[in-house]
Image 1 (spheres, each protein chain N blue to C red):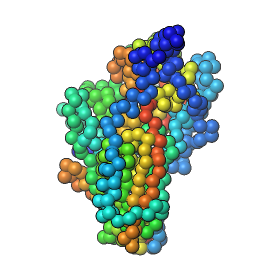
Image 2: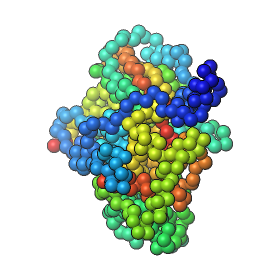
Image 3: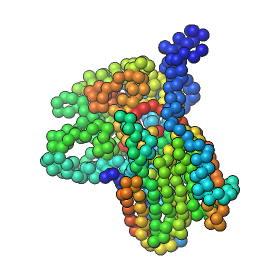
Image 4: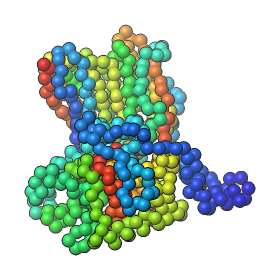
Amino acid sequence: MLTRRDTMALGLGVAAVAMVPGVASASAVDDAISAFTGGAAVADGGVTINAPEIAENGNTVPIEVEAAGAVSILMLAAGNPTPGVATFNFGEGAGTSRAATRIRLGGTQDVIAIAKLADGSFARGAVEVKVTIGGCGG
Amino acid sequence: MKTITKLWASAAICGAMLTGMAQADPHPDAELIIEGELHLATRAAPPEHLGGVFPEIYSGWLFRTDETRALQMDDFDNPGILFAERGLDRWNAADGAAGQSCADCHGDVESMAGVRAAMPKINENGELWALEHYVNNCRTTRMEADAWGWNSEPMKDMSSLISLQSRGMPVAVQMDGDYAPFWEQGKEMYYTRFGQLEMSCANCHEDNWGRMIRADHLSQGMSNGFPTYRLKNATIVPLHQRFRGCIRDTRGETFREGSPEFTALELYVSSRGLGLPIEGVSVRQ
Amino acid sequence: MSDVRPRIRLPRSAKAGDVVEVKTLISHNMETGTRRDGSGNVIPRQIINRFTCEYAGKMVVDMEMHPAISANPYVEFDVKVEESADFVFTWYDDDGSVYSETQAFEVG
């Protein structure tokens, strides 16, 4: 039987989870993808996402995305309150279709990247990042 | 069942926080080398006064993930360096009614080498002061400017800049003579249980380092990396702010930043890291 | 924001036709617009919403940013350098401020 105090004790470790204000709905992710692709079909694969398997803190997660031949890459965080992260548009001065940045993840979730290739087709990659919610104060 | 509940509710509440104890030992062989040039020791023989409580002392850097450790190995990747760079602008800028800058008295900021390593230090009135006290003393008496808040952006910029001048120099706090009473006060605090959870510094950082708490790896609580850029806060965290966070997490009333209590604790905690180098602005989770 | 400061890292040298890695960082809180202050009021959103890099007058990368980009935004990418020219880096703030940094680069 769990008393209220037990629950409190248990809750210490997970309290932060409850503070995440909300997560993006599946439709918000779909909407963002359709806005980017104009509703075109998206093939799986051809997009590489490098991210830590476990992020020590969700506030600063290093992430790298690459898709050979892409003219732009949309990056989404499916579990954030709003899914948008960034869109990279590569110009004629770009040496590769690769970019790296640091992002905020509100919890364990999928990071999705959709690449628009030079021929107008689209490709998709996704990776799950486990985010440690906790840590002592400061 | 009742007994179990009682246990949960009282003495073992600490235990509850420490459940899921997985070993999270310091990295066995990672080396902290900044931009392939500056090697900072992250392991050292423990100082004698610790009486053998640690087999070896470890920088908090060794308890972090590969990604977090990497951020400190390149000054471009280390966001804390941004604060030090802004600090240099402040160093050279006149402020206050006297129209003086730090540089007017102290010259190049390189003159601050070793200052952070020896903090906290006793001032001419016999009080123990941290770096921030000295900065504010300069501001209010020599520059006739307003004091900066302990955790304010300009103070973080300045303490980051000054700390960086000691990067690689060994922790050099004094413990004897006039320092002894402050050191004893700090030691007393280190072993005093605070808050509703009745936890002392030692409960986590001496008894349980290398284990998990609050889904986090417990380090030995070394202070040589401060001020530190914390990913969680996305800003510089001064040592006294960290102390405050620790005590708050015990559900206790905390002391304030810059209080005689925290300054004495800073002295004692720093002395536990004698043998480790100042990391200037480190990066932690 | 008065204390916004860009940092750029370019390689020391390159030959014509090389692909070089460029790293950029700018000090900025990237206020998400979802946090509340001590009195419970929502802190208004203020982020860098766009970053661009041009080399020799050609667009390298034009990045749209959302609040999920971490404080002190870091961006790394690759540039093909054919000739000595200027890099122009530009950050666009929600408050209308534009921060720009130009750096000359020698191709040997």
